[in-house]
Amino acid sequence: MRFTIAIDGPAAAGKGTISRAVAERFGFAHLDTGALYRAVGVKAQATGRDPVDTARSLSPADLERDDLRTLAAGQAASKVAALPEVRAALVDFQREFARREGGAVLDGRDIGTVICPGAEVKLFVTASPEVRAHRRWLEVGGDEVQVLAEVRERDARDMNRADAPLRPAEDALVIDTSDLSIEEAVAAACAAVAARLA
Ligand code: CDP
Ligand code: CDP
Image (cartoon, rainbow, N blue to C red):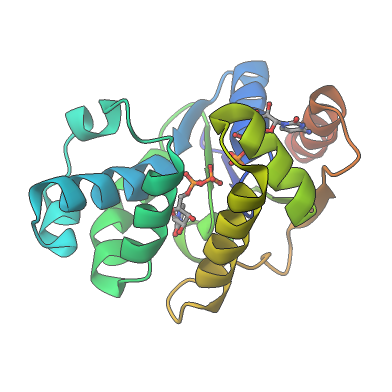
């Protein structure tokens, strides 16, 4: 069976948490596409190499770096993600993953709009900037005001870029997790998937 679930939304909205839970519940494979952009950003910065070459030669080992979840990696990711040639270099891998036998969940910014416009289920997971920054601050620590500023900066860069800007697909179900527990958010997502599978 081929069945694609596209989960998009801004930073720290709960996309990854929901995606992992949905993939486990339905036995689908999961791809965190943000990790691709984080790996390109961090590796290009560390090596001084061109981000486009870095994206074209990205290897599985690059996704295993332990510095991909930092705020700095998020910023580096959103800068290289604005380059159309970087995005183009990552398209085939994501589309092949999406059409794998047995079902796939992909989370990112442009899965429902650009990578998999034909996805069987599209979710747009969001929450207020303050709630999202608080969640990210609980993970990374430091100064919460600074975390909020970085979340807002990254959202603005992702929404205002010319190529594949962050926005809900027209046919996406929007899930605002601001006032939802993880369990409630996962239940809403699973209900949408179960309805489409039925
Ligand atoms: O993938 P994304 O950046 O959208 O978010 P995430 O990494 O899934 O979630 C960010 C943090 O928010 C995690 O620590 C989650 O446990 C937490 N979270 C939450 O508190 N309530 C939710 N409804 C969803 C996520
Ligand atoms: O977990 P969080 O939502 O903070 O970020 P992420 O999903 O790991 O994505 C990091 C950055 O990569 C985003 O801010 C985007 O600039 C970029 N990205 C993208 O452009 N397209 C995607 N499909 C996924 C991520």
